[in-house]
Structure formats: structure tokens, C-alpha cells
Image (cartoon, rainbow, N blue to C red):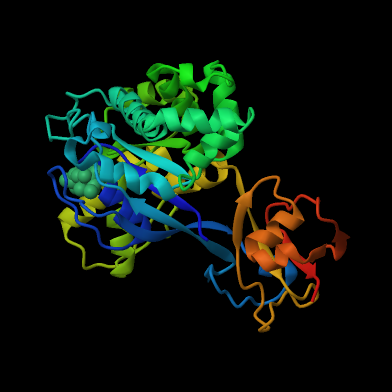
Length: 402
Ligand SMILES: Nc1nc2c(ncn2[C@@H]2O[C@H](COP(=O)(O)OP(=O)(O)O)[C@@H](O)[C@H]2O)c(=O)[nH]1
Ligand SMILES: [Mg+2]
């Protein structure tokens, strides 16, 4: 199963534009709240070197296309419709939207650095709303939503916890199964919240929110994508960057609209641009002066100061920095780097750093994990055991019981 990242934020900050730019798929873009009713799902890619170059072979990609030595590893992106304050109480289709977050392993919170949308997402004059307020509001919404799920029929859950003989973390993780919440997330959250694990029947609503906050931090980590950087006052960008630092949140300034323009231009064949590039070249003389001016604005106000549009940058940072993932390539034959069908380096898998060879086998296929005997690091031809930690860029052969 591919990794899923949810795009969240209040209406009109540019989530659908970000989604379209990142997935090069269509999503409705409009300047009023609730344009997006159903979550849009699409595929975006993070770029990583293809081992075919170092190994001197030609690859036959399956799940991850190879672009001239760079593998495009797929990530599912969900364009979640806008959250408004008090969404957890059912305001503005909130509960449904929050439900769409279930599948996400991480969230990219799109905020409007231009300050051109109020707290509810209505368009206002640029610079009149402080984007810093939005950072806290979204965390609070998710925390209350989680606390709501957890607290629903709490007496029953408390009884189940008591009956579990002290396995409080496990009982709560079970209650939140389907949300990607692990026992380790809950356990750390309980310690942090300072609640009495033995007496869940005495926890207050406030305690539940505290526990929910800890669980959310671990199970739905957030990266802040500071959008509309093209229109933002650089001082605001700096201030939000510092605010994120203080909150220990990753921050990536971006301009979804610029990325969309560059990708569309590249698709139309009028410019040379690869997603993630710091620059582009105009390759056609058919552009109008106005179009050229708009593109030069992107160059001077986005690519120059921020080193890119930030769209692929945000996705990449979410995968590699926020979730601390690595990419590895499973093969059947460690000499030819092929799978059963003879395809060379067919698939790329993203797994958490620290994943062992055996865990990696499970990720490829449950049966492969169950029948795991040993693995071979195909680059070095070294035989490794179940506990060997897979490294970024590894090509791994799993030897399993027939
Ligand atoms: N200046 C600027 N405007 C943007 C950018 N991204 C989106 N917008 C505009 O913001 C408005 C809302 O965009 P949309 O993607 O529909 O927002 P959503 O409601 O969060 O999905 C539209 O008018 C977009 O053109 C950007 O990077 N810069
Ligand atoms: Mg939208």
C-alpha cells in the first residue's frame, strides 16, 4: 500500500491548487468555501536516484517510473476539503472531512502566507489575516475530533481498559484502530499527558484532549506548507518560519500556483521545467509578453528567494524528514536484480528508517515475511539476517521458504 499524505487547511488557502500541481490532475479550483466536497485522491512522486545507474543495468520499472536515472516513487495525496473553526462540532461539513484524514500517515497543512483569507477561509484583503493563528486552530480541530472519537461511550472504553489488566495503551489503540494509531503512539501520549493509566474512569474531558494531542502528534505528524509565497510579504514568511521552528514544526514556503503554471507550461512544450527544479528555460517564441512577464515574476519572486516552488519540496520533506522514510528495491535475483518475471529493479518501496530485512519482506508481501529465511544485500552480495536494517537505496533480495 502506498503512503498517503493528506492536504489540510481552511478553505481558499490553495489546497486544490497544490493538489493539481503535485498530481498534475484536475481538481476544482475556485475562490469560495466548500468547493471540494469529496476528497480528491491522486498520485504524486518523490524523486530518488535509481540504483540502475550505479549497477550499470537498464531497469524495467513497475510501480515507480524511472526518469533518466531518477526513480519517481509514488505517494497518494488526498485533497481534503476545507476545515473551518469548530469543524469537529459538525460545522461546515467538518466531521466528514475529518473522517477523510483517517488514511493519512502525515498531513501537509497548507496555510495562506499572503494573509488573504479570514479564519473561515473567506477572501479578504492581502495581509489582513495572520496565518500564525491558523496553525494552532487546525491542531486544535484534529485534537478535539480525536478526543471525540475516543470519548464516545467512554465508560465502556474505561471498563474495557480496566478489564485488560493494565494494558491501557493497547485498549486505546484498539479503540482508534483504523486511524493508523499504534500502541506506541498511545503509550507515549499517556505518559506525556500524565494521566493515571489505572483509573481511566476518572479522566476528565480535558485529560482526553491531552491524550488526543499526544496521539495526533505521533500518528498524524504535520508539515506546514506556507502557500501563496509569491504574494506574501517576506517579513511574514520569516515570522511564520520562526513560529514553526518554535513549535518544532517543519515549514516549507511554496507557491502552488507557480508550480501549476510551470508544469502546464512544460506540458504544453513552451518551457523546460522538471518538478523540483530551481529554474526553468523558455523554449518557445510563441509566448505573449504578459505570459513571459508572469513567468519572470515566478522566477524572481518564488524560485529565486525560495529555491523552488516548494510543492515537490513539501511532499519530499513530509516523506523524508517528517516521516523519516527511506526507499529500497526488492528483487528476486541478486545477480540480475530481477523479479520473478525478469523485470529489472521493478519496484521501489518507502519504509521507515530502521526497518529490518524481515519487516521489509512483510511490506513487500505478507507471505514473504512469514516465510523469511534471510536476505541478501544485492549491491554487496552480502547475506544478512532478519534484524539487518535496510538502508536508503538498498536493493534487497529476500530468501524465503518455498
Ligand atoms: N497568489 C497565489 N494564489 C494562489 C496560490 N495557490 C492558490 N491560489 C489561489 O487561491 C484561491 C483558492 O485556491 P484553491 O486551490 O481552490 O483553495 P482550497 O480551497 O484550499 O482548495 C484560488 O483563487 C487560487 O488561484 C498561490 O500559490 N499563490
Ligand atoms: Mg479545494
